[in-house]
Length: 149
Image (cartoon, rainbow, N blue to C red; front, side, top):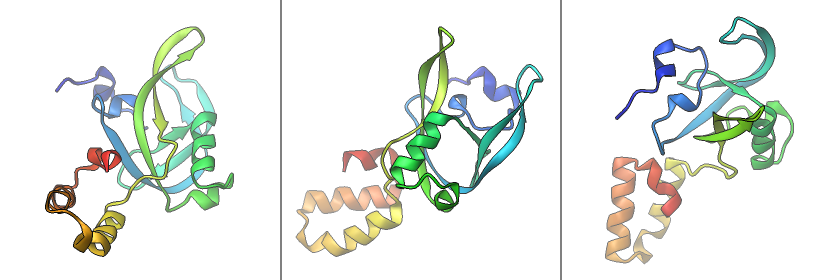
């Protein structure tokens, strides 16, 4: 595993560099508000910031705000509190330059508790192979495999 140079700078916010290549991270929004953020070059900007349970906060740009609003069918930040979002790293074009960015999957994340509840409801109708695979996913919490279900 390689280390992104920005991980060594101890930034105050989660960013694309916080995730390993191909990694996704499902987090819970604790709050969203406007905050003054000091950039790498010392410039202060007022930004929309999401406080994330157990993680560094995330600066929400317009694209990520629209994605959350679409996922949860509400433009109101108060409705986002307690909701889960799945983050992934990608790139975008910014002022003619390709830069890394953190984005939000445009679907509601699958929550382990939901999988366990569904598994309990459906386990009698599963084939032996399906039963063993579902049990393995639940036991090892293979978050990256959820999309394959």
